[in-house]
Amino acid sequence: MKIAIVNLDKIVTGDWRDPLADGDTVVMEEGKFTRVGTVSADDLKDCDLVLDAGGMSAFPGLIDSQVHITFGDYTPRQKTVGYLESYLHGGTTTSISASEVHVPGRPGDPEGVKALAVAAMKCFETYRPGGMRVHAGAIILEPGLTQADFKEIADKGVWLAKAGFGAVESPFDYTPMVRAAQSSGMIVNVHTGGASIPGSSAITGDHLLDMMPDVSFHVNGGPVAMPDADFQRVIDESEIALQVCQAGNIRTAVMCLNLAVEADAFDRFLIATDTPTGTGVMPCGMMKSMCEMASLTDHPAEWMVAAATGNVAEVYRLDTGFIREGKEADVIVVDAALGGTQDDALTSIKHGDYFSIAGCFTAGVPRFIGKSRNTPPSKRKVEIVHNNIPNPFTPTSHV
Image 1 (tube, rainbow, N blue to C red):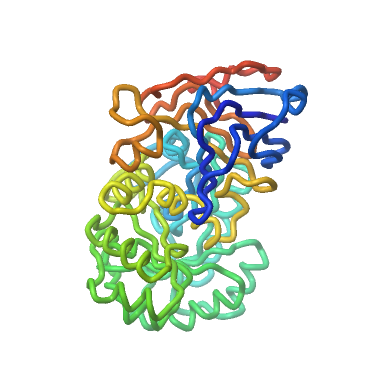
Image 2 (tube, rainbow, N blue to C red):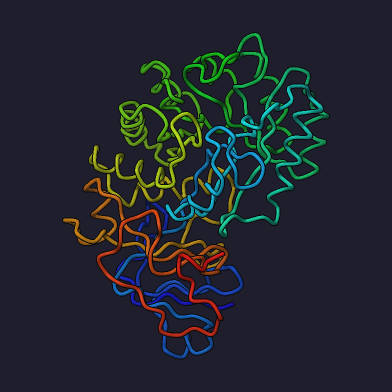
């Protein structure tokens, strides 16, 4: 399938150092971006679908690196069916599991947590709710796991691990398991801040600097933040990625962002949601945090797009997150909301307003075109000017 989006006013790359691409067209073929920039009419002749963006912008699909996946498109915590497909309508084209800790009756022994991670991973190998990519199967670090256990499940394809919900006596007890998981090639995420469920404990800067995980989950609190003084230490004394979440403390998220920029560590700054949780199901949670971080600081909106896309892709070693030739083609077509005071999606974010999503493509396939059901209508209109595919890709017909 070959798809082109033409007449774009801005192409936001997902790279905060080089945030805007020249040109007005994005071409996708066989699931990859093949052209980004300016193309000729001949380049469009063999397209299966051509979408006129009408002067809107293109963003990489958002990557939420903390979603509480279980099995299928269902969250037991909030008893909601179809939430992942709904998140797609908030611009999230990729979700990364925060571990399957919300599975009812989830096991706590080594064999059980290994089986849970492998089963969740395999459930989403080919299942894409609404077209969303889901990286599921994060092993929950529990006492008794050995180097051989991590190698066993890594050989089966598990590449994520999560510390913070195991039956350890002290968070320092996670350190040898973190090292073992990392030595097996896994990316290790660690719950940060106050305890969030019965039986867990607070994890602070001292614990993070001992464990040295790859990512500090909800460093701004999930929902309660670690001490303010710990942020500077974690930034200065480690390379730990700093994930801020919608389900956390906004004040400390802003503080963390400013400290990261001052330390030239913005590459490590990630935006996520930490949902579904007690905070609820939040289809536009990524968008909300992007707007808050841009409007409450002096930093540009393009950087917040990168914190929700390219930065995440780099930390998690994904082949998406950028609008760049050769990358996996996940892209959303965005605009200022109808009736708002701003002229485009970037100025809307900087102003603190939600933007509108008028089209979503994952793996180079249109998922919906016209209007997201979870965002306001757009100021401009998109138009399908050529379509050989027997599907109008309206929000009610997309699969």
